[in-house]
Amino acid sequence: MARITEETRRSNEAAIRAAMDRILAGDVPEGGKCDIKTLAVLSEVARAGFYPKKNRDGSPRPGPYQHLAEEFERRLALLQQAGEIVDPKAAQIERLKAHVAELKDRVTKRDEALAELTACKTLTVSRIAAQHSEIERLREQAAALGNVRRLPAARGGTAASGSCS
Image (cartoon, rainbow, N blue to C red):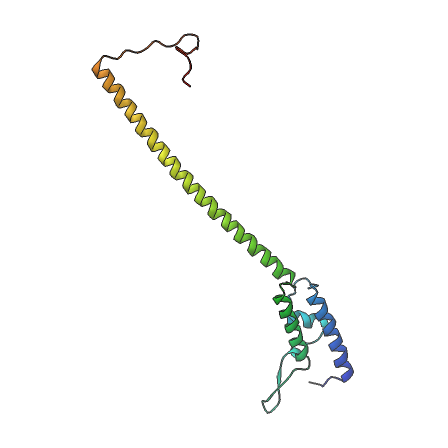
């Protein structure tokens, strides 16, 4: 691989810094993320330049733009620590996670309310059934004794003797 000239390196570094500023300002291109790959694509510099290299003897050496990758990661971490989400996709994911948590909470509360209402309904129906059985038993008992007479029905829809209130 041919070595790049100092002028090309300065030009690439300027393009990388401009792309870095755009990405960290939230201007992430469609399909991109807030990462080194997108930084390389926007600056039109090979991504390999952002990572360490090895000399022929196996010893490590920094990539030509590794210091800019580290600066990018550092600035991104500072923004994240400040609570700012630069990547629109990540921001959308966070909003959706919060919305899902809220919906789960609402569903849980509604499930609890539904369980309470079902228990109340069951209790109410069993009480009505018990009262109905008691009324039937008392009617049968009264009929067996034979000393109870039915009152005539009220005429004209008026109450026989005043209100029950």
